[in-house]
Length: 208
Image (cartoon, rainbow, N blue to C red):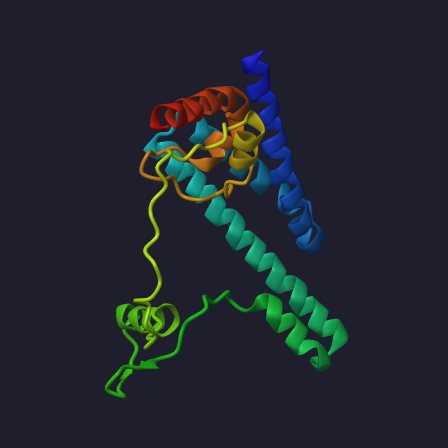
């Protein structure tokens, strides 16, 4: 039964990937991407299965080839679009053909009035300007609050909560220090839900 659950979760994850690929194929042409999609998906499954440097490099190689092909097909699509529609639609095509740019914060003035473009200094200036509130309020007349004498009680963790938490994990996020990828947790969640639920509740019981 656990094995069947794992296989079912694998199939569900592949269906999600197929739906995402379908959106791209509608724009640039299904026939030109089918072979690349199959190779990329096969390499992704091999990477999850064997977790070796070779499979990771192979997966990255096919992913890059797929992205390059999609970019090329999109550019060709919008060039044809412009040839048919004319210069009035240049802005619409430009939105889809330009490279994606990350949001950047302009240079900020420090306390001396000097402009700085250093990332660390800008982060500190933003933190001080947004999070630190300087006030002259006198709080001495507010009575001190006594901490509760009884220990806090936490509700038990349910399997539904654990399931929702696993399903909400970002699919392609880099692994944390434990080395476990979110994609693996999602694929294995039928086997992990009960184990993690018992583990969390045991921790709560020991702390209370």
